Image 1 (cartoon, rainbow, N blue to C red):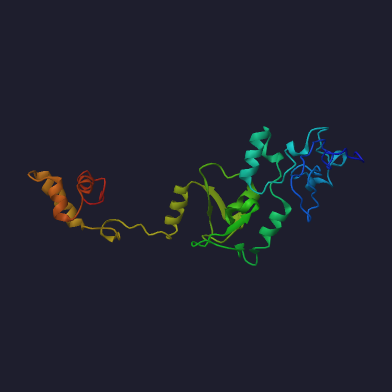
Image 2 (image 1 turned 90 degrees about the vertical axis):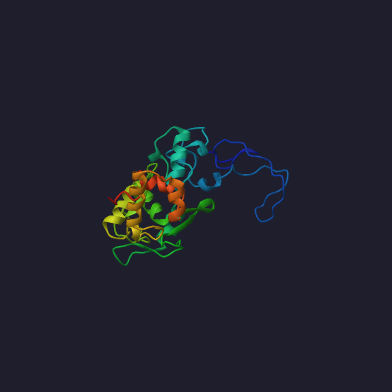
Length: 247
């Protein structure tokens, strides 16, 4: 490790040249016209630089190393890995402070690890991470345990507790898988026909519309006006796209 850093170069020992300070800042010790001591974010690795860092690659800047910046989300790690052309496993999953902050908001007294932080109107946890980004707490928990969530997939709860962040209670599937799971457990009531809150006609009226149109002598717009519907709705009823369960 180099004991003395040349004037105008990053003090982490990476060999990068720093920019010139354009504005005084008393608290940070910045003096206008002087060079910065570090390149952006390089000060975070001052204790793990040069020969002390087993991942150091000679004169290459640590900022370009896949192991330099601890990203908070699997999405960030995926993008960084794509940019560097390396495996996502080479990118640190989360900064220690991010994981610690997350764990402090979990109540692990029961089988479900209940999120005690902010929640949305549906009871799902909301976790605020670096850069002001918001991620669902259960998605963060799954990413932390398993890695990147595949594109087009959602994280579902097997315990039906939206505030739960126990990875053992989470599984990945499509939105349709999530809906089917919801229906199979009786948590979603499917309304159809007259029981639907948006229904404007009865099943008997549906049969009447189909029979009268089949006999001929009546237009769809006339049926629509008579039953308080619109012509496209009449077409969908006649073609059995809507009210298909009515014979």
